Image (cartoon, rainbow, N blue to C red):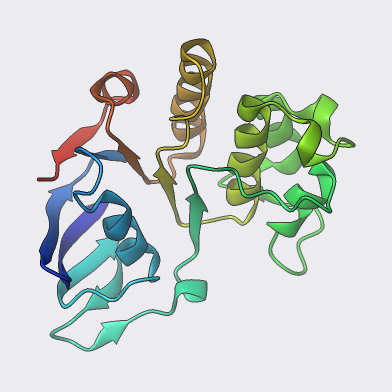
Length: 209
């Protein structure tokens, strides 16, 4: 079982809940703004503690309220790609990518892909010596995805990563995400309010209300 999730959290006057069990390597959380999609991702990352339930990803128990399990965020080995790229503006692209590598790993890479192969797949080889401020939105998001993957994560969380891009760049990055998943088999939880994105990615779609 790739995903075994059942989490509940009370925030203000809202109850946020998300429950699914799936062998699919890609799960998409779908719903309008304000329904709790980002909060669900933050619980999977360990940034928010659920009030109740459990989280298991790739056979690893990460949280279980009943058993008293709550793995620290740094030990969950989670790659997180946000809606905005959040690149370090004082670092060139090469240094931004290097920042994601585990300590003591000179080459980087993830799930059988070397850093060089990942850079080639993402199409960012020509960007390595540029500053983040000089990148287009699509280029910056590719770098952000590369940085997350070079941390060698056990799973990847993506919070509306292409919502600010035009349609052509959206389709380009969606295709790239699908290729990355096919090559690495890394479990992905992808958040969007656009059902067309999710249909392109495939996998299981969970509607939050």
